[in-house]
Length: 308
Ligand SMILES: [Zn+2]
Image (cartoon, rainbow, N blue to C red; front, side, top):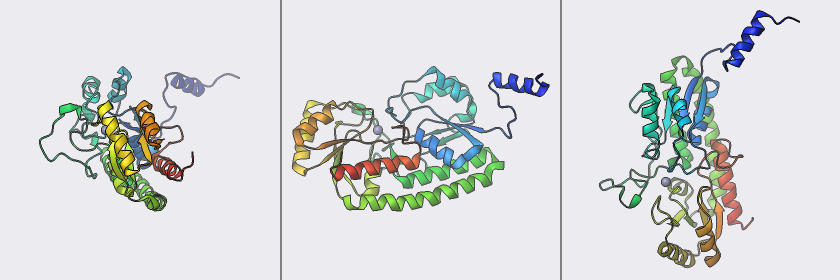
């Protein structure tokens, strides 16, 4: 059978990597974090194509600026960042090199997801990065409170409607569906966490103040002496004493930190090291923003019940 002209044209387009018949061009949304991409997917539905630069199992403070990021940024219609200088170490030069004025800070295609969110530990004095503190403008891990996730989703819906006005109704409907599901899940998560209110924990990095506040946990200390500063022998000793004195049972560790010090502390104290995931994509099964809380909360409850 002879190939038809149409089939040949289709093949040519396929070889070029182009869609054969796009119903409409999707909005290309680049995010720094997978959490933001997940929220953009949930709100944008099939009108957007999202791409996250950083994987959920990578430390979001210390990201290798890959040249491939520049190409991704150069093609983006929108860029969503966590803000609060979480991306300061890699994003600004990439953004310059992308030469995409649409997504520069202040341009319509740029969205700082922290706007409107509850940000904890904002500095009360002059901002300083002295001693290497990587949280100079307040805690940048704020999406670990699902209520902040709701605020981020609303900001994304508004931004998408601004950039793609013909999708306004679709974005509003997707947002309503997201918020309805989130409200249901929040009841479930709060119910699971309720028995552990006022439980004291130690975490490796200061990633969890919003999560802890939402579920009434008390973060008694961190394995890092300051955010972004590796453990030191003196501080490790202090944490061991703290865990013994306060009878703390769990040390929560983000997936990108060396387990050597947490395991040493656990050996000395009898506490348990629990891998805890601050981002979508931290594990293959943490596929979206809902799965993030499903996974972490179930892991926490199991650890508190003493199950492996
Ligand atoms: Zn941090």
